[in-house]
Image 1 (cartoon, helix red, strand yellow):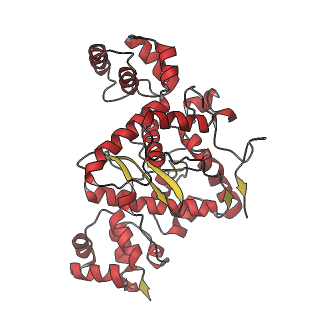
Image 2: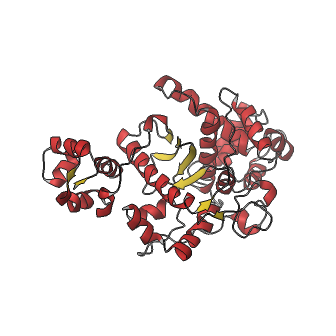
Length: 384
């Protein structure tokens, strides 16, 4: 029996190895690795492949897997982020879709409710999505749970670097968003809103280099308008608000102070001069590089609900899931936004986000992702 070639390619990409680097680990010539990724490798090489890539032996004997098409993925990343880093993130994404397959084989998740607004101006698109999701102009609730309740599959980026904040992609008819949690919770909310902008505005877009800047600018505009509705921001802050008022309002909208100040500039509530003065004062207070007294990262309702059921009803705890998929347990932990704990104690259960803990934003009218015990709300239903 020969090892599955597509699995070798994916494991190498996830580990961030070139063919030449993997060849050195295996003690073979680079052309041999090319052959392995085309026709498969001898079974005896499985231990060496596992050691080189961090994957488990069983990964390389699983069935053929089609990689996520990286040319169709929208990356929120630094301009100079290397192809190697992006390929590693996309490879992690494929494992994420396999985690979700374990879930969808056993649970019925909310149906997709994501409009195609290709070609629409971002501000109008944000208003349209808010109307379709019955949000009105009030601050958006837990955004991870909101997206999940509309059929968007939100996962983490395990082992991510500061070079990639997020990426989104359509795969097998389903929208996926992968988020890094190395930045502030406010930044993660904006990143998720940004990727939602890509999913509704750019699903049919061609990702050529000349269009990337415009596409990214449109997704940023959508995120700003979605999280900070112009009418509500105007009503709360008025014209020329002080830094003290901005800092109070940022917690209401659960965004960064810098993002709120920029929105005030685009809505005309801050003049260019006042905006620059405000931005300088915020920077001096530490808001340019961080978010003093920020919110907590938002929890996933899907993972909170199904991971316990998978463990209790199907015997699929973190270690069993990792073994079934052939990946490190830490990969499952990262992909599930930290909800799946590892035997080595990697991470701790994510604390309830501030809005959920207070019960102030996550009511059913806000489109919260359903739970198995959520009364009359739609619920995650066990299929088998």
